[in-house]
Image 1 (cartoon, rainbow, N blue to C red):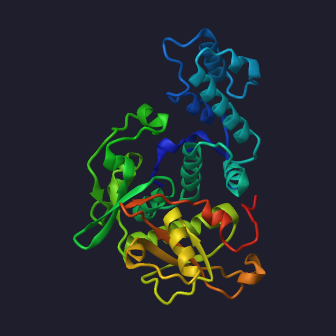
Image 2 (cartoon, rainbow, N blue to C red):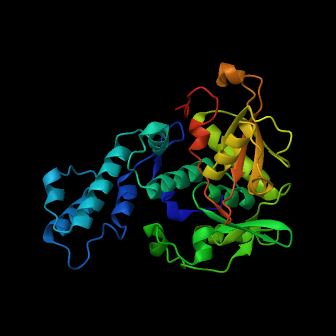
Image 3 (cartoon, rainbow, N blue to C red):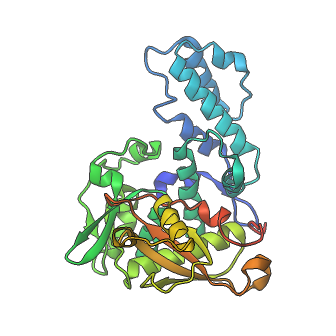
Length: 334
């Protein structure tokens, strides 16, 4: 199989017997390479000593006094956040278990960047056998904000940071791998799909999200794989072409905008056409096993909504698929 998304660090992780990702020293050291933690030349000797010690043993116990002794206040804060994150990773059997713990109510002050990185590497695991570039590109919506524009009647999604020419939260592996910071954006199609693997870490392909086309269907496949990998739930996710005459008895908004629109429709409010036009995707989720569905939702269709802001930004929240569905709490069978 072709490799992809090297920058997420999946090759630095191990797998357990159930297929979950297990933290390694090498994976922890990738965090220590981040610019926020690499001591600058003017850093105090305490900070430099701590950084060197953790590079040698990233699981090393760090006493609170060691952080307090760092001279720079910003550095103290960065180290406190990082060590709390490291301890959380090491306290759980798998990366997947860490993610489930966080999104089920213990996010706290976890930086969104760290949460997105978990989604990135978990999806890399879930899609390990995928050879469809359209599915992989659609999966980027789970952890990369998108900028949507209409071009010649088509709705095109491009990576927001790539469009803006900034990538301030890039993985340190990006620079280690020598990947260019910016590149020309091409809409993914059958003619250039084979180029996706070589450029997957540049996030410089755009996806056609027009209703009835391949992009939305590919995203539906990613959602199904996400549910099966994280929650051990098998289902089919069917893209629909219209929101009208749909009974939203059970639905999940896949982003803040979609949740707002879905709530209004569910309450029977009149939703203006401008808001309806911001709906990017509507899906019907079918779960063949009735035992996984909560009693009050059995026999009811389950819908998933995806939308963009008035200025065309789409920021998907995959955690809603874990916390918002009317299903029994389950997880990877391992």
